Amino acid sequence: MGTAETPLAATAARPRRRASFRRRETFAFYGFLSPWLLGFIALTSVPLVLAFAMSLSNLTTVNLHTNLHYVGGQNYSRAYHDHEMWYSLQRTGILMVTIVPLWIVTQLGLAMILNAGIKFLGLWRTLFYIAVVVPVVAKAFIWKAVFAQDGGLVNRVLGALGGNSNADWLLDHPTATLVMLLVWGGAGIGMLIFIAGLRGIPEELYEVARIDGANATRRFVSITLPLLTPVIMFQLVWGLVLAANVFVEPVLISPGLQQGLGSTVPTQNVTVNLYALQRIFGDGDFGYGAAIAWIFVLLLLIVTALVFLSGRFWVFYSREQYGK
Amino acid sequence: MTQGAVGVDAVPTRRRRRKRVRPARLATQAILYAFVLAFAAIFVAPIAWGFFNSLRELHQGVSGPVIPRPAHWDNYRYAWSGLFSFSHYLWNTVVLTFIATVPAVLTSAFAGYAFARMRARGRNTLFILMLGTTFIPFSIVFIPLFWVVVNLGMYSTRWPWLIWGVSGSAFLIFLFRQFYASFPVELDDAAAIDGCGHLRTFLHIYLPNSAGPLAVAFVLLGTGWWGEYIYAALLLPDRLLPLGVKVATGYNDPTAQIVLIPATLAGALLFTLPAVLAFLVLQKQLTRGIVTTGLKG
Image 1: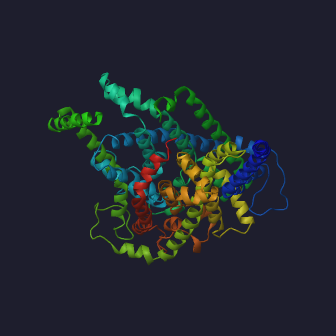
Image 2 (image 1 turned 135 degrees about the vertical axis):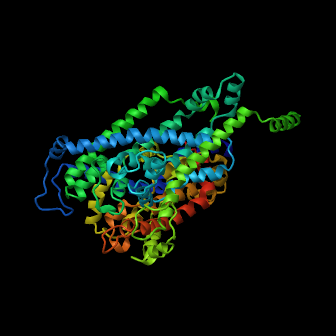
Image 3 (image 1 turned 30 degrees about the horizontal axis):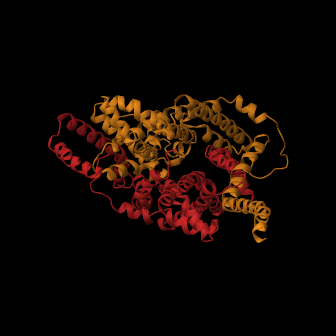
């Protein structure tokens, strides 16, 4: 009798227990996630909506003034006719298409050098990485000292090589100076990620290729590059977002070695982020700044989505095949 | 038996290889080391240049002999206490870095565990949303946040840093998720048999075994906050400023209206030192952590 009852009792109890287990699991999940989730709501979702609301208003000070009202798409049409806004967008675009390839080539190059069985690996890796941990303020002043017109390191080297040793880099070539700063200061993390990617490629593939008589170039093009495409994609998207967000460095490396932050940023280095912030903290125009920021976000979203989609044509996913 | 065969086979080949160094191989090695040295020089030269110039006469720019003579080591003393109290702003930096980093690492570890090990409705959607936040540019979030911070009376306070800290970082959550997803599931089962809930499993099994990702998290986020500039510049009054801002503005000659470049560089390098030391101490965990967490995408 007892044996006949147990299965019945079990089938009756199990669904209820499973439901309560699932509910508890969901509870625990959101409990674990709650600090991040609250932050996500307060620091990302709400600001995004608020920024959109601001962009539709004539908010011009930090305080809610009495004649605050809805202005429709006025800020957006103003941005559309603002040549300086378009110019800043163009400068951001130029930064993105110059820095990102330079980053990827430098990072991959450094990673491959370090992966070639070199001695004192730890020392070289540290030296290549160290610039990443240097705070941006220190980086900026070091850069000003390196690119100073009078006695800067770059002009000294150029002079020693017989070139023009009197260029005012910070004023006349601000974008080139900025790009070099960002490549120098930002290559380290990507290098470590590429090293990890290179280590993930099975050594057997290279051995087989060597037996088949493939030379180093062929091995790089046919094995290393295709198997690294997922990493390259990751670096590409991440790099694009980082490059799009540049705006602190231009302010900190404004021209004039001893003029400090008082001198104005050359227009070539006014990125769209900086332009939006200047409208707000310079002109107090919150509504207009928010509209520019939203235009920028949408454009960046389109660009990153296109890059992602392009992956279908060139990213090689091989996890099942090689077990990595 | 196969092992023995491999062992016997391996010894002579290795010996043979060591004896005969082919010239082609020697050439590639030479090129390789030339490249390493060149890159190392390029990456370190700016820092060395900054250091040399921190030793010039206080009112000088960067012209003159490469290594200044005499070297003005007292510039470091001047950077420490000449125009402002360096230690006061150093303390500010420590406080801001601490309240923004430590809670963020914990929050991110909790969230990473939840994404890797717990089943709940909405998990995948939230994960994608979480990754999506990394694509949102600074300006669009900061513009309304600034306004909110001012209107909530948190302007000129450190509260925003604590809030940023508690809410974690999407990048770190991803890092912890990748790491915990590769943890052996048997550990969970063993813990479950012992009657551990998720909280105890996480605190007693997962967290103590995450030295790698914890090091990565502390180095990446900690050095980031240590040198942070823009939030502090826009939100804090002078008495609460971290060195990340103070170094840029603090070394102006009050009479000549110029930036004292040697003092600024000395201050900037003093300010850089703790970040570099933290990196040097944790670098082994950092590089290993990036390999093992599958951060490579």
